[in-house]
Length: 324
Image 1 (cartoon, rainbow, N blue to C red):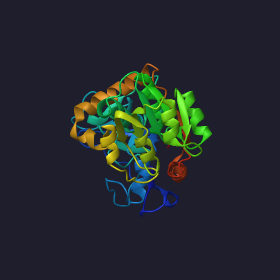
Image 2: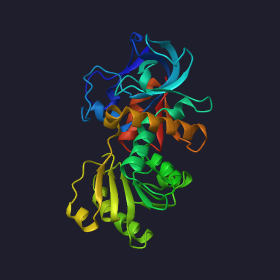
Image 3: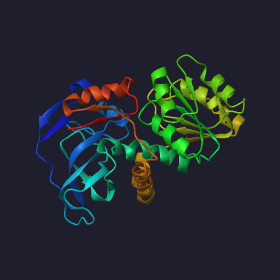
Image 4: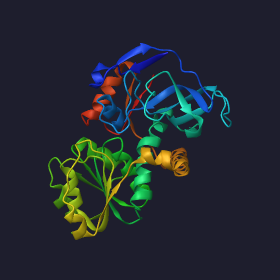
């Protein structure tokens, strides 16, 4: 089979496609013919050895795939050859024609849910549902401010925030991204490349500040967003595409607010029951049409480097996938 290989840490342009043996399904595993693999920000960090989970080269990037079951390993029940499934791989192995998926972490896909649309549900939408519902306790009628709202993770917060009944303020760095956010349900938008983030957020909330901040950007935007948080607000730390910020902790005292970490990947290992509940809810929302994942880029294996570069340069709009 063909697979994308990272032979040494470095830029995505160094990735190569090679013929490698098809993996063998062991006990508790499914061999899946990959139809789509999610391209995520952790994939970009792993290439440069900057992620919490390490993958020594040579390895194949990609942590979540959707496709057809090709082989069912020993001890697996509830799956058959030909089933349409989506599942997480852990951290690697997805950018290939075949991947091994733990049956315990796989879910059958309803016929109406596309492969490209479903892959990334566990990573992007899972992160967001876990963050908004279980860490941020977002309530209907509250105001949610989203940094990096035009990206693959941020856009899921726009969609899920609206489904949860929040007033959504989407923040991004270009009018193109903000237009996409409005199309996906954002009530208000802020272009933080041209507008003062704190002042505009305060203006949109009548000076009260926002109830919840969803920050998958970090950098210089984090402090401005924290300053725009209202009394007893919740600031969700999701990612750092613009760098790891330093913020004055006295702001948490003055606002009696919380800074809350959202580490979905670690939670899935610590609390499988919650992970399963989140994935089941997301598949149901997608199957019923309440969630409509936006796929903006589809790349073959040979262009995996381009797909990753689009995330690294923050040019991607919504979800990007590899389709072998």
